[in-house]
Image (spheres, rainbow, N blue to C red):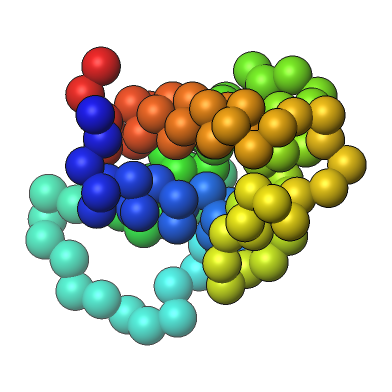
Length: 139
């Protein structure tokens, strides 16, 4: 049994997936497009060794906690999505990604060959699998 607040968190992660993926890709593009010359001069200790290349400097910039969180969320949603069948993917798309603000009610989902009960089971399977990958749900 999944706790109600964990269920809600996982739903939000899934629903935010398209926007988070765009945000992460923009972040990566900005890091890769930035120059390796620092904008300000910073006094560093003698133990500090400067990055030897532009690539190394960019890789060091990519150690953001926020970026790691986004990457983990994106990976979890994509992994679960890719392991679903085509009809189950439609249920996921229509339920979570049709509207940004809310989940579409099961009775309003058209174009899939499932009953409401089957769609509930599919969504539960999706929630549990994403939750396991995010660490919100114990195996």
